[in-house]
Image (cartoon, rainbow, N blue to C red; front, side, top):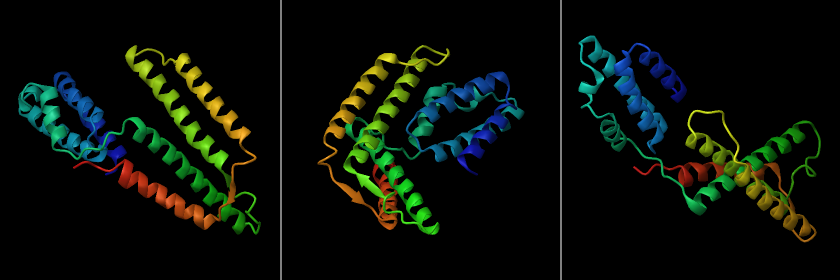
Length: 221
């Protein structure tokens, strides 16, 4: 089963639980999903627990008794048995964002380059990449990610209300972006521009995805 299918099955099983069992079990679900546990393995374990709850429910055993009475303590014991995804902070976090954005950039170059070749056209003019473009893509990705995360953070802090936008954060990051653009465009005459063949973009794209998988998103155990 895919992760999405497991989540859907989990939701279906929860509907069959008594209100008390569902409340206790959902505390475990929230804790596990908010942890750094590998998502797919976590969903597999939650699905197993949901089935255990329903089996115990048929015998008249509440989930609180089945799992020791403390949902958070039990959830932590579950998390401890699961592979953990390394948490990125500081420079590594922003490097991952920029790395991802540039990987997507080269993926677009692959599609454009090979698409032009299949259409019988020269894609040389379309496959020119400048240092300015690289800077703007990387910086822009970081800015947009920060704006999005700040907005989510404000919504989470204020509870289940209408999502808000952190205007101060947006202003700060937009100023940074403008500075980057001004500096970049002022140097556009001296910054190099390369023609990157589609096959080179493909290699760089593959390296990008491998880096995301084995450097930034590797499991810790």
